[in-house]
Each structure stands twice: as C-alpha cells, then as structure tokens.
Length: 395
Image 1 (cartoon, rainbow, N blue to C red):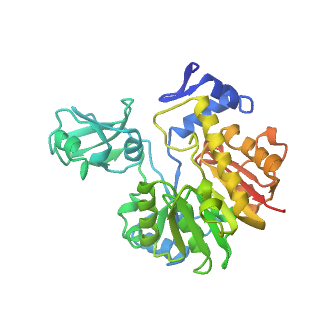
Image 2: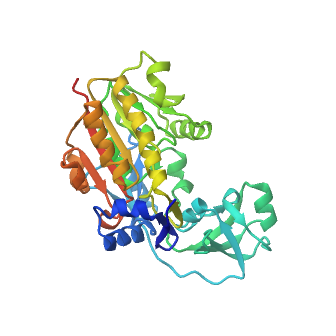
Image 3: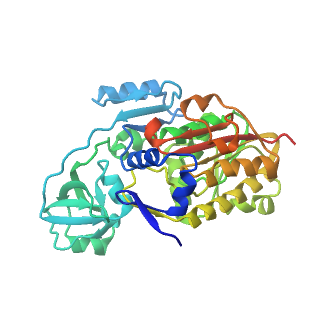
C-alpha cells in the first residue's frame, strides 16, 4: 500500500487514488472539493411524501410554525431549510469523544446518543461538555444527560443534549411531520436519482441495494399506489430500517426482500423489471460533512469490481426496452465513468439522456459523451459529490 496524503484536515487518501483524480481535476480544485466535503451543504434537503401530502401544503404548514423552508424549482417534492454557521463553541473542561458518524451528525446540530460515544472519561450527568470527533476536532457543546461510564456501558439513550453545534440545521427527525411519515431526510442528488429513473404507475421496479430506503420510498410514492417496487438488501440490520421507513411513510406497494441481489435471476427466475435502480456500495468520497476519512486505491478498485456484478445481474432481469439507473455518492472515475464504459462495451447498454442533466455537470472527458450522465460536485453545486447514469436495454 502506498503513501497517504492528508488533503485537508482529517481526510487521508492514498497517492495512487489522488493521481487518478488529478488526471481530470487540478490539485487546487481537488483541495477545494474536499474542503467543501468537510462542511455541510448550505441547504438541508428533505423529501416530501407526496403520497400523503403535497409539497406546497407541507411548506405552508412548516412556515406557519416559524420554519424558514423553500421548495426546489424543478423537483416539487424536494424542500430545503437553510443551514446556519459556522459558530464558535464555548470552552468546556470535560470532553466526550464521538465516533465518526455521530460526530458528523452533532456537527450539524444533532444530539449525541450513547451508541455514538467512544470515550467520556470523568464526565458526570449535568456537566457542560465539548463533543469532539475522533481526530479531536470540536463539533458541539452541550450538557451530559448521563455519566460517562453509563454512556459506555448502557450503549443506548441520549448521552449529550447539544446546545451549540458548529453548524445548525433543523432536527428533522424530531418534527411531528417526520413521525407522521410526511418527510424523508434525503439530499438533492439522491432525489434526482429517482426522478431520472422516472417511475410510472403500473411498472415493476427493482431496487437492488435498497436499504435504508430513501430511493425505494421515493419510487413507491411516485408510483402513486399503482405498480410495485421490489426492494432487495442483504443486511438484516439495514432491512429492518427499510421496513421501518416503508411503514412510517404508509407505503403499501413495496415488497422488501432480504437477499443478495447479485443472484436475483437464480433465486427469482420469473422476476422481470421494467426499470432497475442500482445504488451500490461505493467509496463514498462525496458524502458530506466528512470529518475523517481514509481511503486506499485498492478499496476503490474493489468497489468498482463489486459494482459491475450488480449491473450484470440487472441486465438479466430487465425487459427489452427497460431502463437502468446507476448512481454512487463518490467522485472516482473507476466507480463512475469506467462503470458506464463497461456497461456500454460489455453489456450492450445505451446511455439515454435526461432533462435533469442541467442540474449538474457532465461526465469526465474519458467517457467522450455527456448525455445520460450527471455529476454533482460539492464545491460547484453545494451538494454531496454524486454520479448518476441512465441506460436503456435495446436488445
């Protein structure tokens, strides 16, 4: 394994991976890109469950309760709240160390729960505490709700009530509208994915890597109760979350299946889909805010080979003339444009244009074509880094 470079604080990437990226992105812009990844987006997006309420009605409801909220101009179910910050944090004598994912949530204003606590030496209930990431970077200031020892031993319950965070976004999951199933916390590019797929009533749609359920539930609501989405995932924990989200949002046209979707045609030989969504595991270099990350080039190549397996299977279950949409939350060419080239050259799929291309940037030059591909860059579009490609099966 080669040498790792700290591009910006806390983000370490192998030199070979960086060389791959700088074939197409100047180093200065790459630093700008990863600097943006360190921060949350300025717009905090959620998706309105239009199976239960219209976006306009929900916006009016939230505004009547004092929220500043806006509707996206092209995607009606996408609404957003402004994100405030950065704020300076007060000094505290006691420190609670949160894991990477919990720290990234606290960084945007979430409370800290016991499962996300790594260390809380000497902390007593009622203490003012500084919450820090594993790197030592401060992310929030709050009051301990339990003793530090209890946080580690119990592994459940609220550990720190956060009073001030570096950035502040609405605590969406505490809203009554969330409990009622009216909204889903989802980035703009993730919502664009389902719009590119364009689910139509009466269609059979397969979501190959469905959990935790953002895109599955979006597909289901756009089907308007007619048609079905088969949601596959191989993780028991993630399947439970998917089932919870489907139930919370009161969607009835979702069939949840715990199964490795790389083998659908073997174990579900009669299943045929009009459309297939592939949002596979990836290197996640575009996810933000990201306070700490370490990635090797070998991991990227491993993801790329894994992603191809889903594409090969999708072609087998897709009807002639059917559509595949492939998406990732990363920026590497190996997991994006190279996958598109593989789909065209080895699987005889054709890229198909989408009107949503205007929301992002074109493909990297190695592909030699723009239609059917959308790239979202954190520093250009103020979104997570994302990639979307739309294919059609002609034969």
